[in-house]
Amino acid sequence: MDVIEVPAIAGAWVFRPTPHVDERGFFSRTFDRDAVAAAGLDPDGFVQDSISRSRRGVVRGMHVRSGAGEAKLVRCSYGAVFDVVVDLRPGSPTYRNREVFDLTGDNQVTVYVPAGCAHGFQALTEPADVSYRIDRAHDPAEDVSIRYDDLDLDIPWPLPVTLMSDRDKAAPSLALATARLS
Image 1 (cartoon, rainbow, N blue to C red):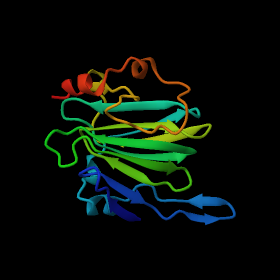
Image 2: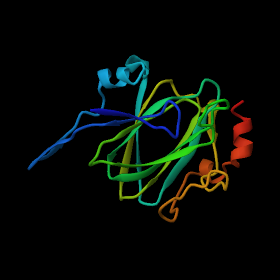
Image 3: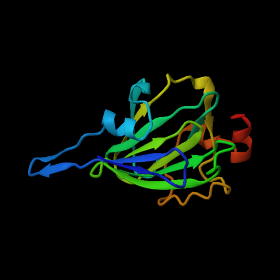
């Protein structure tokens, strides 16, 4: 498994496995304790695994947690997604930078999203499954959403948005949302 630092987002990492492909399909390691530790992360610090399934064109995000935040490992386990991370940590050398990733079920690439960074994605296939490994138990009172089409984020979503949650539809601007994070 290759471990690659993401220069645009301080503390973000990409874990690129080597899927073993044959006539049956493939086998891939999706979590490697030693690779996570080599990136300076605590492999035992993750407490919850979750998965979402989305239809083509669905946007989920942009989401971040207030309080202590939430770090997560994110990968597309089936299909393909356009994945976005935005650094919203005041004082970070990469504050307000964004990075996009093409995550697919074929490449099984995992992105480490540091606490304090907003995350979202758009499903490019029908369906797309995204798996999350999260470092804190979920507390809905700490959920913060940001408008997916906020001009300050300038995210180049590749498809027309077909569907999103009511929460994401009603999400405030980046300026209003970041006030909840301090």
